[in-house]
Picture 1 (spheres, helix red, strand yellow):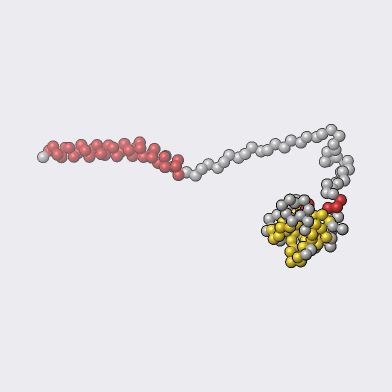
Picture 2 (cartoon, rainbow, N blue to C red; picture 1 turned 135 degrees about the vertical axis):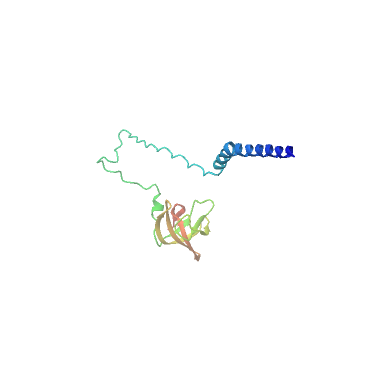
Length: 158
């Protein structure tokens, strides 16, 4: 009877030794592994500030100088500058057509695609938006076609 009892005690001590060894050594590593897997990613590093370089060319007045500012000149042909309300215009130079939009914005939906040569009556404008000059047009032979178009592709008619 003494032998089975001693064997169970030895097995119990071996199990207890294994559990204590795991608790003291293995458990901290297991917890560290879990923390590393589940932790939130670190925020990205703050970017370095961008340097601004100012170059001053000879014979060019600085913005703070008292020299008079040059008078801006239009790069548009004189005929484009002549567009005004009440004038008839033709679509010109698009290649693929000119979108007439519901509002003077490139984000507004296109409601009609005007082809080169189509004529319109200028109803309203100009409005500067999205780096373009916009005019509200009405199609000459279809009065229900109305929309906003970019000036760049309009040519005044006599």
